[in-house]
Image 1: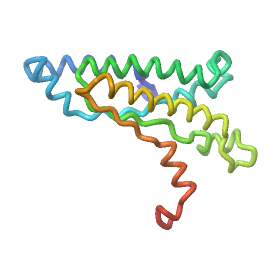
Image 2: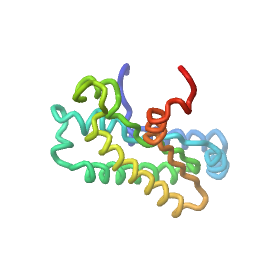
Image 3: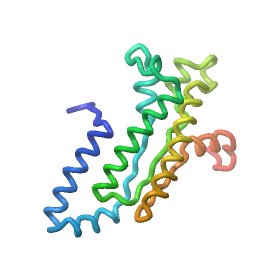
Length: 172
């Protein structure tokens, strides 16, 4: 299917099927669990939820139903269940990538910026709320699962540092 997206829930279902195949290949659940515990699961969360849902009110009613805080809570609740499912099926090393400054993306600058150069603050503010909750989720999972490691990557902060201190990153 060209151009199709697979939701995170769909990806978790695919993973569950893959785990069954790994069990069959390695001969036991213990061997599969040992193998899967060595893998790193890199998961970028939230960008599509905001760009292709929350901030598209002509197509989705999400932003009319939820304020940014409520929407972030809904997403974190769903991600908690999905990440727990991955953990339950043997994943132990997680890298969770936060949402970047999507209010500074070329599309948002072209469509929603006052001057085409100033980032769209209402979008970035919503992203900061989500990222704060995602950091809390990482802490929650680390505290509850001593046999696992969850790491948060602050893409928002990295991008902010690059744009605030470009000389620190060399010349173009």
